Image (cartoon, rainbow, N blue to C red):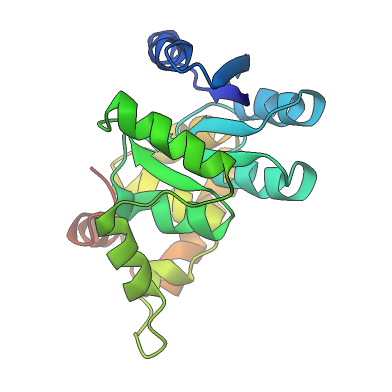
Length: 210
């Protein structure tokens, strides 16, 4: 029996996922979480085989949550669920140990198949993501500027690139506005950009936001 923890802050999404799980005789829901902190607690204290983890939850950013899970709960398989395209977070999630990355337009059957593959220790990636991973791993490929950012810098890049203000970004990532401003300065310097307008154009040109 595959023991599942569903982590999403939207009740309607959680209910939909619970219905999919209920129709699978080899799966059992053992808990729910609504923010990153609760995910970490429940993955440590409960018997969880597979975690369905939403990208956009309150608390620690999902990348930070992934990093903590890899350290404190390495046996838990993580399937990342997102409304964001694969271009935005998929490669980073897989590098942090995720067993798969699924956008929320996948069918219930595809989700169930991904859960079973993760439980068996496999990886679930779409054909397009597999091609992207191969491209990322080419040794002679010149690394894109945004690929050189830390995970937190990358999160700030995507938030600001989507037009979110420093104050709004601070609230969403659980940081202070001063800290976000510091990350913004680092991002601009590393990517050799000068203004928010240039940052937004870069993010849109590279498809880092929907």
